Amino acid sequence: MFIKELTARNFRNYGSLAITFTPGINFIIGNNGVGKTNILEAISIASNIKTFRNIHDSELIKWNEDSYYCSAVIGESDDRVFEIGCTLFQDKIKKRLKIDGKEIKSAADYYGRFLTVTLSPIDINIVNGAPEARRRFFDSVISKIDASYFETLNEFKKVLVSRNRILKEIKINNISRNQLDVWDTLFSEKAHSIAGKRYLFIDRFNSVFRNYYGNIAEGDDPPVIEYDCTTGKDDAPAILEKLQKSRSRDILLGSTGIGPQRDDFILENGSGSRFINYASQGQRRTAAVTLKIAECILIEEEKRKKSVILVDDIFSELDEKRRSKMIDILCRGNQIIFTMVHFNPEKLHKFGMYRGYHIEAGGLIKELS
View 1: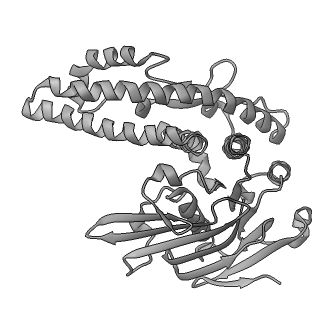
View 2 (view 1 turned 180 degrees about the vertical axis):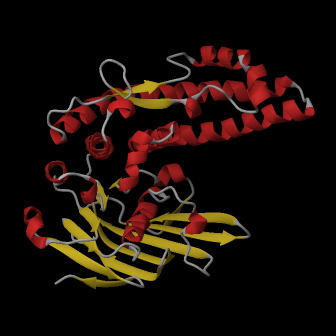
View 3 (view 1 turned 90 degrees about the horizontal axis):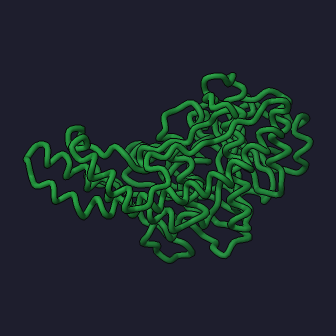
Protein backbone atom coordinates (compact mmCIF):
# COMPACT_ATOMS: atom_id res chain seq x y z
CA MET A 1 0.00 0.00 0.00
CA PHE A 2 1.33 3.44 -0.93
CA ILE A 3 0.07 6.94 -1.69
CA LYS A 4 0.19 7.97 -5.32
CA GLU A 5 -1.28 11.42 -4.96
CA LEU A 6 -2.54 13.67 -2.20
CA THR A 7 -4.88 16.59 -2.81
CA ALA A 8 -6.32 19.05 -0.32
CA ARG A 9 -8.35 22.25 -0.38
CA ASN A 10 -8.61 24.89 2.33
CA PHE A 11 -6.56 22.75 4.67
CA ARG A 12 -4.31 24.53 7.16
CA ASN A 13 -2.16 26.99 5.15
CA TYR A 14 -2.99 25.40 1.79
CA GLY A 15 -5.75 26.83 -0.35
CA SER A 16 -5.04 24.15 -2.94
CA LEU A 17 -2.55 21.30 -2.59
CA ALA A 18 -1.64 18.55 -5.06
CA ILE A 19 1.46 16.42 -4.54
CA THR A 20 2.57 13.03 -5.88
CA PHE A 21 4.80 10.51 -4.15
CA THR A 22 7.06 7.65 -5.13
CA PRO A 23 6.20 4.23 -3.66
CA GLY A 24 9.55 4.25 -1.84
CA ILE A 25 11.23 7.09 0.05
CA ASN A 26 9.97 10.68 -0.02
CA PHE A 27 11.32 13.82 1.66
CA ILE A 28 9.49 17.07 2.41
CA ILE A 29 12.05 19.76 3.26
CA GLY A 30 11.57 23.28 4.58
CA ASN A 31 11.95 25.69 7.43
CA ASN A 32 9.74 25.48 10.49
CA GLY A 33 6.30 26.98 9.99
CA VAL A 34 6.03 26.63 6.20
CA GLY A 35 3.57 23.72 6.25
CA LYS A 36 5.61 20.50 6.07
CA THR A 37 3.72 18.80 8.89
CA ASN A 38 0.41 20.01 7.47
CA ILE A 39 0.95 17.67 4.50
CA LEU A 40 1.34 14.72 6.86
CA GLU A 41 -1.76 15.86 8.72
CA ALA A 42 -3.77 15.85 5.49
CA ILE A 43 -2.62 12.26 4.89
CA SER A 44 -3.54 11.40 8.48
CA ILE A 45 -7.02 12.85 7.99
CA ALA A 46 -7.57 10.81 4.81
CA SER A 47 -6.36 7.68 6.61
CA ASN A 48 -7.65 8.00 10.17
CA ILE A 49 -10.46 10.59 9.91
CA LYS A 50 -8.55 12.80 12.34
CA THR A 51 -5.09 14.31 12.55
CA PHE A 52 -2.33 12.54 14.44
CA ARG A 53 -1.85 15.76 16.44
CA ASN A 54 -5.38 15.35 17.87
CA ILE A 55 -6.41 18.85 16.82
CA HIS A 56 -10.06 19.82 16.44
CA ASP A 57 -11.31 19.99 12.87
CA SER A 58 -12.29 23.66 13.19
CA GLU A 59 -8.58 24.49 13.57
CA LEU A 60 -7.67 22.61 10.39
CA ILE A 61 -9.87 24.74 8.12
CA LYS A 62 -7.96 27.50 6.35
CA TRP A 63 -8.51 30.99 7.71
CA ASN A 64 -11.70 32.66 6.42
CA GLU A 65 -13.02 29.39 4.95
CA ASP A 66 -15.80 27.14 6.27
CA SER A 67 -14.70 23.71 5.01
CA TYR A 68 -11.77 21.55 4.00
CA TYR A 69 -11.32 18.56 1.70
CA CYS A 70 -8.61 15.87 1.64
CA SER A 71 -8.19 13.04 -0.85
CA ALA A 72 -5.58 10.30 -1.26
CA VAL A 73 -5.16 8.04 -4.29
CA ILE A 74 -3.69 4.70 -3.17
CA GLY A 75 -1.72 2.04 -5.01
CA GLU A 76 -1.50 -1.70 -4.27
CA SER A 77 -4.81 -1.66 -2.45
CA ASP A 78 -8.34 -2.94 -3.02
CA ASP A 79 -9.57 0.56 -2.15
CA ARG A 80 -8.11 3.24 -4.40
CA VAL A 81 -9.48 6.67 -3.48
CA PHE A 82 -10.13 7.92 0.06
CA GLU A 83 -11.93 11.24 0.49
CA ILE A 84 -12.94 13.30 3.50
CA GLY A 85 -14.89 16.54 3.43
CA CYS A 86 -15.44 18.60 6.55
CA THR A 87 -17.80 21.57 6.92
CA LEU A 88 -18.14 24.01 9.81
CA PHE A 89 -21.63 25.53 10.15
CA GLN A 90 -22.90 27.38 13.21
CA ASP A 91 -20.02 25.98 15.30
CA LYS A 92 -20.95 22.41 14.35
CA ILE A 93 -18.68 20.08 12.39
CA LYS A 94 -20.05 17.74 9.75
CA LYS A 95 -17.88 15.20 7.93
CA ARG A 96 -18.50 13.08 4.87
CA LEU A 97 -16.40 10.01 4.11
CA LYS A 98 -16.03 8.32 0.73
CA ILE A 99 -14.09 5.35 -0.58
CA ASP A 100 -13.94 4.96 -4.37
CA GLY A 101 -16.77 7.43 -4.75
CA LYS A 102 -19.13 5.59 -2.39
CA GLU A 103 -20.22 7.43 0.73
CA ILE A 104 -19.31 5.61 3.95
CA LYS A 105 -21.85 6.21 6.71
CA SER A 106 -19.96 4.55 9.57
CA ALA A 107 -16.47 5.53 10.74
CA ALA A 108 -15.92 1.88 11.66
CA ASP A 109 -16.33 0.95 7.98
CA TYR A 110 -13.70 3.53 6.96
CA TYR A 111 -11.08 3.29 9.69
CA GLY A 112 -8.28 0.79 9.21
CA ARG A 113 -8.56 0.43 5.42
CA PHE A 114 -5.91 3.01 4.52
CA LEU A 115 -3.04 2.15 6.85
CA THR A 116 -0.65 4.83 8.08
CA VAL A 117 1.70 5.00 11.07
CA THR A 118 3.05 8.38 12.13
CA LEU A 119 6.28 8.99 14.06
CA SER A 120 6.35 12.49 15.52
CA PRO A 121 8.07 14.44 18.31
CA ILE A 122 4.73 14.58 20.14
CA ASP A 123 4.85 10.79 20.55
CA ILE A 124 6.91 11.43 23.68
CA ASN A 125 3.57 12.33 25.30
CA ILE A 126 2.59 8.66 25.13
CA VAL A 127 5.47 7.93 27.50
CA ASN A 128 5.53 11.14 29.56
CA GLY A 129 1.90 12.19 29.46
CA ALA A 130 -1.36 11.36 31.20
CA PRO A 131 -3.08 7.96 30.90
CA GLU A 132 -5.42 9.42 28.27
CA ALA A 133 -2.52 9.69 25.80
CA ARG A 134 -1.62 6.03 26.24
CA ARG A 135 -5.24 4.89 26.02
CA ARG A 136 -5.68 6.90 22.82
CA PHE A 137 -2.58 5.32 21.30
CA PHE A 138 -3.38 1.71 22.14
CA ASP A 139 -7.07 2.11 21.25
CA SER A 140 -6.10 3.45 17.83
CA VAL A 141 -3.75 0.53 17.16
CA ILE A 142 -6.25 -2.13 18.24
CA SER A 143 -8.96 -0.41 16.18
CA LYS A 144 -6.85 -0.59 13.02
CA ILE A 145 -6.51 -4.33 13.55
CA ASP A 146 -10.03 -5.06 14.81
CA ALA A 147 -12.96 -3.10 13.36
CA SER A 148 -15.32 -4.56 15.97
CA TYR A 149 -13.17 -3.05 18.72
CA PHE A 150 -13.47 0.39 17.10
CA GLU A 151 -17.26 0.00 17.01
CA THR A 152 -17.50 -1.28 20.60
CA LEU A 153 -15.30 1.56 21.82
CA ASN A 154 -17.53 4.16 20.17
CA GLU A 155 -20.64 2.51 21.63
CA PHE A 156 -19.01 2.47 25.06
CA LYS A 157 -18.22 6.20 24.87
CA LYS A 158 -21.89 6.95 24.17
CA VAL A 159 -22.98 4.80 27.11
CA LEU A 160 -20.45 6.53 29.37
CA VAL A 161 -21.72 9.97 28.36
CA SER A 162 -25.31 8.91 29.11
CA ARG A 163 -24.42 7.35 32.46
CA ASN A 164 -22.45 10.42 33.56
CA ARG A 165 -25.30 12.70 32.52
CA ILE A 166 -27.75 10.73 34.67
CA LEU A 167 -25.32 10.73 37.61
CA LYS A 168 -25.34 14.53 37.51
CA GLU A 169 -29.14 14.66 37.20
CA ILE A 170 -29.51 12.41 40.24
CA LYS A 171 -27.24 14.70 42.24
CA ILE A 172 -28.84 17.96 41.11
CA ASN A 173 -32.50 17.03 40.56
CA ASN A 174 -32.77 13.96 42.80
CA ILE A 175 -34.24 11.74 40.06
CA SER A 176 -34.56 8.00 40.66
CA ARG A 177 -31.33 5.98 40.80
CA ASN A 178 -33.14 3.22 38.91
CA GLN A 179 -32.57 5.19 35.73
CA LEU A 180 -28.95 3.99 35.92
CA ASP A 181 -29.93 0.32 35.63
CA VAL A 182 -30.03 -0.03 31.85
CA TRP A 183 -26.87 2.05 31.40
CA ASP A 184 -25.00 0.06 34.04
CA THR A 185 -25.82 -3.17 32.23
CA LEU A 186 -24.69 -1.79 28.87
CA PHE A 187 -21.59 -0.25 30.46
CA SER A 188 -20.59 -3.58 32.02
CA GLU A 189 -20.97 -5.51 28.77
CA LYS A 190 -18.96 -3.02 26.72
CA ALA A 191 -16.29 -2.61 29.41
CA HIS A 192 -15.78 -6.36 29.65
CA SER A 193 -15.37 -6.65 25.87
CA ILE A 194 -12.90 -3.76 25.67
CA ALA A 195 -10.77 -4.93 28.60
CA GLY A 196 -10.60 -8.47 27.25
CA LYS A 197 -9.30 -7.31 23.89
CA ARG A 198 -6.81 -4.96 25.52
CA TYR A 199 -5.41 -7.81 27.64
CA LEU A 200 -4.97 -10.05 24.59
CA PHE A 201 -3.40 -7.29 22.54
CA ILE A 202 -0.86 -6.08 25.10
CA ASP A 203 0.67 -9.56 25.34
CA ARG A 204 1.41 -9.54 21.60
CA PHE A 205 2.49 -5.92 21.63
CA ASN A 206 4.98 -6.37 24.46
CA SER A 207 6.88 -9.06 22.62
CA VAL A 208 7.38 -6.89 19.52
CA PHE A 209 8.02 -3.70 21.49
CA ARG A 210 10.70 -5.20 23.73
CA ASN A 211 12.47 -6.85 20.82
CA TYR A 212 12.77 -3.64 18.79
CA TYR A 213 13.60 -1.46 21.78
CA GLY A 214 16.56 -3.73 22.48
CA ASN A 215 17.56 -3.52 18.82
CA ILE A 216 17.58 0.30 18.78
CA ALA A 217 19.01 0.85 22.28
CA GLU A 218 21.73 -1.76 22.57
CA GLY A 219 22.62 -2.39 26.20
CA ASP A 220 19.39 -0.91 27.62
CA ASP A 221 17.01 -3.23 29.43
CA PRO A 222 13.70 -2.94 27.52
CA PRO A 223 10.74 -1.81 29.64
CA VAL A 224 7.58 -3.89 29.80
CA ILE A 225 4.07 -2.49 29.29
CA GLU A 226 1.53 -3.48 31.94
CA TYR A 227 -2.17 -3.02 31.35
CA ASP A 228 -3.53 -1.40 34.53
CA CYS A 229 -7.22 -2.28 34.30
CA THR A 230 -9.66 -0.84 36.86
CA THR A 231 -12.04 -3.78 36.40
CA GLY A 232 -9.33 -6.44 36.19
CA LYS A 233 -10.38 -9.60 34.41
CA ASP A 234 -13.90 -9.49 35.83
CA ASP A 235 -16.77 -10.67 33.68
CA ALA A 236 -19.71 -8.40 32.88
CA PRO A 237 -21.85 -9.42 35.93
CA ALA A 238 -18.92 -8.72 38.29
CA ILE A 239 -18.35 -5.30 36.69
CA LEU A 240 -22.07 -4.57 37.05
CA GLU A 241 -21.87 -5.42 40.74
CA LYS A 242 -18.91 -3.06 41.21
CA LEU A 243 -20.80 -0.27 39.43
CA GLN A 244 -23.82 -0.69 41.67
CA LYS A 245 -21.68 -0.66 44.80
CA SER A 246 -19.96 2.56 43.70
CA ARG A 247 -23.14 4.42 42.74
CA SER A 248 -23.12 6.76 45.75
CA ARG A 249 -19.52 7.79 45.08
CA ASP A 250 -20.15 8.20 41.35
CA ILE A 251 -23.22 10.37 42.04
CA LEU A 252 -21.22 12.55 44.42
CA LEU A 253 -18.46 13.05 41.81
CA GLY A 254 -20.77 13.17 38.81
CA SER A 255 -18.61 10.69 36.87
CA THR A 256 -17.93 6.96 36.57
CA GLY A 257 -14.95 5.82 38.63
CA ILE A 258 -14.15 2.49 36.98
CA GLY A 259 -14.01 1.24 33.42
CA PRO A 260 -11.89 1.48 30.25
CA GLN A 261 -11.94 5.29 30.42
CA ARG A 262 -9.90 5.05 33.67
CA ASP A 263 -7.40 2.37 32.62
CA ASP A 264 -3.72 2.92 31.92
CA PHE A 265 -0.84 1.25 30.11
CA ILE A 266 2.21 1.58 32.34
CA LEU A 267 5.82 1.22 31.19
CA GLU A 268 8.00 -0.28 33.90
CA ASN A 269 11.07 -2.42 34.49
CA GLY A 270 11.17 -6.01 35.72
CA SER A 271 11.09 -4.85 39.35
CA GLY A 272 7.93 -2.80 38.92
CA SER A 273 9.61 0.63 38.90
CA ARG A 274 7.93 3.02 36.48
CA PHE A 275 9.98 3.74 33.38
CA ILE A 276 9.28 7.46 33.58
CA ASN A 277 10.89 7.62 37.04
CA TYR A 278 14.30 6.32 35.96
CA ALA A 279 14.56 6.74 32.18
CA SER A 280 16.68 9.46 30.59
CA GLN A 281 15.20 11.72 27.90
CA GLY A 282 16.98 9.63 25.27
CA GLN A 283 15.49 6.41 26.66
CA ARG A 284 12.03 7.94 26.71
CA ARG A 285 12.42 9.11 23.12
CA THR A 286 13.59 5.63 22.12
CA ALA A 287 10.55 4.09 23.83
CA ALA A 288 8.21 6.49 22.00
CA VAL A 289 9.75 5.65 18.61
CA THR A 290 9.64 1.93 19.39
CA LEU A 291 5.95 2.10 20.32
CA LYS A 292 5.24 3.32 16.80
CA ILE A 293 7.51 0.74 15.18
CA ALA A 294 5.72 -2.01 17.10
CA GLU A 295 2.40 -0.54 15.91
CA CYS A 296 3.60 -0.79 12.32
CA ILE A 297 4.84 -4.38 12.69
CA LEU A 298 1.68 -5.69 14.37
CA ILE A 299 -0.69 -3.99 11.93
CA GLU A 300 1.16 -5.47 8.98
CA GLU A 301 1.22 -8.94 10.53
CA GLU A 302 -2.53 -8.80 11.05
CA LYS A 303 -3.60 -7.00 7.87
CA ARG A 304 -0.92 -8.49 5.59
CA LYS A 305 -0.48 -5.06 4.00
CA LYS A 306 2.32 -2.53 4.19
CA SER A 307 1.57 0.66 6.08
CA VAL A 308 2.54 4.10 4.84
CA ILE A 309 5.02 5.47 7.38
CA LEU A 310 4.96 9.20 8.09
CA VAL A 311 8.04 10.55 9.91
CA ASP A 312 7.68 14.11 11.14
CA ASP A 313 11.13 15.62 11.79
CA ILE A 314 12.31 13.26 14.55
CA PHE A 315 15.92 12.87 13.37
CA SER A 316 16.99 15.67 15.68
CA GLU A 317 15.43 13.85 18.62
CA LEU A 318 17.79 10.84 18.47
CA ASP A 319 21.55 10.40 18.58
CA GLU A 320 23.33 9.22 15.43
CA LYS A 321 23.52 5.56 16.47
CA ARG A 322 19.84 5.26 17.40
CA ARG A 323 18.82 7.26 14.33
CA SER A 324 20.69 4.83 12.09
CA LYS A 325 19.10 1.83 13.82
CA MET A 326 15.64 3.34 13.43
CA ILE A 327 16.16 3.97 9.72
CA ASP A 328 17.35 0.39 9.19
CA ILE A 329 14.19 -0.91 10.89
CA LEU A 330 11.84 1.39 8.98
CA CYS A 331 13.27 0.55 5.55
CA ARG A 332 11.33 -2.68 5.09
CA GLY A 333 9.77 -1.95 1.73
CA ASN A 334 7.19 0.52 3.07
CA GLN A 335 6.50 3.88 1.52
CA ILE A 336 8.04 6.44 3.89
CA ILE A 337 7.39 10.18 3.85
CA PHE A 338 9.87 12.19 5.93
CA THR A 339 9.67 15.85 6.87
CA MET A 340 12.85 17.64 7.92
CA VAL A 341 14.43 21.06 8.08
CA HIS A 342 17.95 20.18 6.96
CA PHE A 343 18.52 17.94 3.96
CA ASN A 344 21.94 16.43 3.30
CA PRO A 345 21.84 13.92 0.42
CA GLU A 346 25.31 12.63 1.29
CA LYS A 347 24.06 11.36 4.65
CA LEU A 348 21.00 9.74 3.07
CA HIS A 349 22.77 7.45 0.60
CA LYS A 350 21.37 4.37 2.31
CA PHE A 351 17.89 5.28 1.06
CA GLY A 352 18.89 4.84 -2.57
CA MET A 353 16.37 6.43 -4.94
CA TYR A 354 13.97 8.96 -3.44
CA ARG A 355 11.72 11.88 -4.33
CA GLY A 356 12.03 15.20 -2.54
CA TYR A 357 10.06 18.42 -2.28
CA HIS A 358 10.99 21.79 -0.85
CA ILE A 359 8.26 23.81 0.86
CA GLU A 360 8.72 27.56 0.79
CA ALA A 361 6.92 30.35 2.62
CA GLY A 362 3.29 30.57 1.61
CA GLY A 363 3.07 26.82 0.98
CA LEU A 364 4.83 26.94 -2.38
CA ILE A 365 6.04 23.44 -3.30
CA LYS A 366 9.04 22.77 -5.53
CA GLU A 367 10.36 19.32 -6.43
CA LEU A 368 14.04 18.77 -5.68
CA SER A 369 16.18 18.05 -8.72
